[in-house]
Length: 234
Image (cartoon, rainbow, N blue to C red):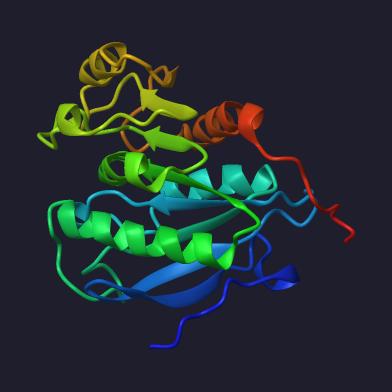
């Protein structure tokens, strides 16, 4: 498989997703690259976003994942969404987070090689936030964004080396899948806790609260955004 190149220019502005097939440790990885909103100055920033649990139907097209990407596009950043092994056109089979971590490493390293001019950040929703967290200490993204992290689901969060950079956690107070109290206790127990945003009356999938999620992500990442390099007219 020949290595695809990162798209440029108007070909990958938000609303014009560019499908790519990347080489992964278990075979092909299906991915989508999407750029900033057309009327927003572009920033040298790419966020790789991980989707929720494949065995429960999680894909890169999940609404929380796409809304998180939208928040980045509105801030002038590009995003890369991808399907873990065994999902969509990605080859391989579900591997309980181990193989999925290898998939993330492959995607992240591809972005970093393709965009040496840009910061590369990590984000994830639910199971995807665990994979992102698990790999953050190794990959050293410019920022980590975790949405509804499954701190009570037996993934061994306490065994992961905590991330030591800018870090945002967004959690719904009425999450029916991840116990919010467990998430808050995990955050409170960290030596360098992340910024925590609690959204009241919000379920795991942010039903009817996706706009609140978008705002929480935009506000949370804004202080750490790199300076814009282009204007919308460039």
